[in-house]
Length: 118
Image 1: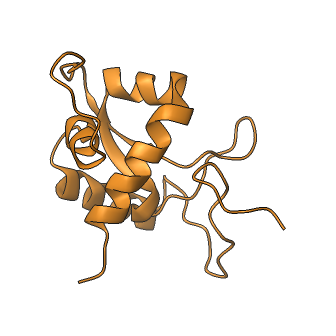
Image 2: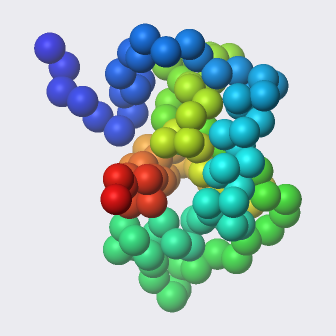
């Protein structure tokens, strides 16, 4: 059995998958936009202990809600649930896409922190 990693697919759930275009998907996206209140890249780097003044990049572009976990296949999206979604500006979304092995663990740590049960 393989060890779990931040790049592994989330565990299978028995609940029905939520499509982004569905009312439930739109509700999840609205929740994430309200929770994150803008691009989370700088906050995620700070929480992960990686925010350095010499590499701070400013947010640029439109704010997008993005899936964090890898999809497991080309053209597939991972689950549309609040524990797999973050708000990122266009610039940081591209960084996450291009440098997923670096950014995904940082964003997953952010999600674990903000979605922690009270």
